[in-house]
Image 1 (cartoon, rainbow, N blue to C red):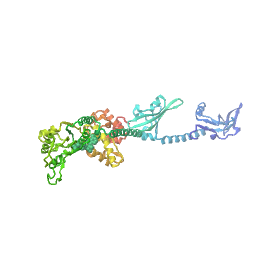
Image 2 (image 1 turned 135 degrees about the vertical axis):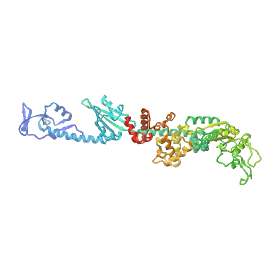
Image 3 (image 1 turned 90 degrees about the vertical axis):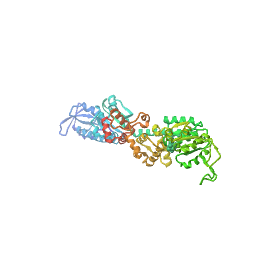
Length: 558
Ligand SMILES: Nc1ncnc2c1ncn2[C@@H]1O[C@H](COP(=O)(O)OP(=O)(O)OP(=O)(O)O)[C@@H](O)[C@H]1O
């Protein structure tokens, strides 16, 4: 039997028959004599018979079925078709077709499910086993509802409504995205089951999400670039769109246009120097020098000559013709006094005098020097407390803090972290000649939850380290410094503020969640976040894979 034929070529099965064995009455063939010369009733049929006709034909006959007398085109006897031969032929053909059909279904990369009219699974192919991680031995003969949430079974629609649908996007489980083709299986207008063919597009969805992410990032970069090209906003070097940071920037822009002395407050590494530079660039003095001096880095003995300069021959080792100090070099521009809290009381007095009188003397000099220099100072110390303790002069404090700008630490503007991470990742990748690696979601989560005592400087260092340690273009949790990993493992439950931004869709897991609905949601979110990868989801949730499987069972999340 050809694989695709529904015709039964009767002549191929027919046995030869002698003309004298045929019994004709009233000109009509009535019967034949068999080998033992007994009379046997026959059914006269044409050369070939459609399978559908065969069923119909047999149904009209008495049982046991008679043999067939085959007629040729001119209605002359052409041979005898024995019912047993016909059954053998049909059985053989059915077996062949069955094997072919099975091979086709098993070779397909789509998940194929066939249910009967009771929604009991009759067929479950290899691709379905793989996609749903369910062995056929567990599925065949059971209801789909034992494995999938009731309202996620689209086959039921095909069964109930008897309608077909094509390429319907569906999420049968939190970790799976499929396109379904489904149709009822009908036999003579009666629905006897349904079939669904599901194409797994999980990977496609994941890639698409990544692409959207990358495109959004590219878009941000382009925006930044255009701002850079416009070169009209010196504050663009200060990255971050959080409200606390943006509000400091707005205030800084206002004070930048004046000549007022500014005191920048903030923890180490928050970007005080960046602010000082931007303040200068945004001021009328932008064409004039910006000179920075770190009060902590210069030994007290040298500080005075650094700040005020010295006269030729003022002391041994000094240049003959003398040297201008930073205050003088910054004339017309800005002098940035970093770490002002480290200045000794003696030097504080000297600095105060210079600021008050707007003139000073070089070390060993006798001629007063008058300068027009704007002062911006910065500190990570609490100067008010230092004043109370007598470690900082009160008059200098008031002189410097005409306008105070407090730069918030990174932990108070966590929403800036993903942006900064991506930015530094790009910068360092470029510098090291690497392609930009991908960051596993749990890494971003760990970075965002870390309190960053060293602020942006520390974050920058960590990113550079990650870039060196990354493997295969992906940064994983194990690449993080142990302190950050430890914090990630023990971090407190999410605050309302944390969940305000998308990167934090999944929050660290609390092992004993009292509210099962909340626990269920967390698990679903983790599976979505990890595209159904249970190992990664368990890691993200901070539980073992076994516990995750137990919980999936408990919540029916299959
Ligand atoms: N908002 C920001 N965007 C991009 N880079 C930043 C930002 N803030 C700080 N940085 C970077 O972080 C590092 C530390 O910044 P900066 O030196 O300005 O901090 P600081 O507050 O002056 O530190 P310290 O008090 O220790 O002197 C620098 O490399 C700086 O470029």
